[in-house]
Length: 195
Ligand code: AMP
Image (cartoon, rainbow, N blue to C red; front, top):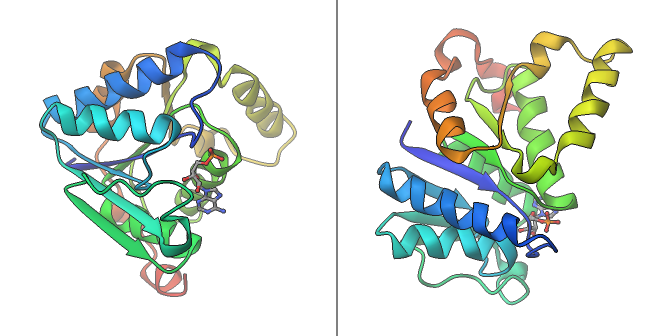
């Protein structure tokens, strides 16, 4: 595991614990020599995780669509800032670059990114580890709902198990590193080429 994509809010949220968790994660990635891949903005939790990683001497790759450059204050300090043509390309490029994914607290954009990467794992487009940093129980309600979805027969529990969950960034990074990518075993080349 060399590069970790982080999905998180473009807003800072009301609980200061969320910004603190974003900064801690940024520092931890840098400390472990892991490159941060993220949405390239300098707003909200996105800006917190990126600036903390950079300040700690880490590498940061930002991927931002051209039309978001002003809106999300594209972060010129990134080691590498990749400007793409659309939201879809952004997600595809981040998915390609990263060896693992972590979702921090966030809003609709974060959910979109997390669920897309989970569904791509479900249908075998990739086998990269996915983690949820459940800061201060932020995702408890979602996890309860996902259990109901499994109980109601709309997703298999084994598919939900693809999502590794912890409230501690260090533990989550250890869990992701311990679950190697299953790409070689079950990635479906043909399906991937159609995305
Ligand atoms: P949010 O969690 O809503 O604050 O958004 C977090 C990040 O997700 C921001 O960089 C948004 O630009 C991005 N985002 C929002 N919607 C989408 C989408 N449909 N596809 C890709 N990224 C998105």
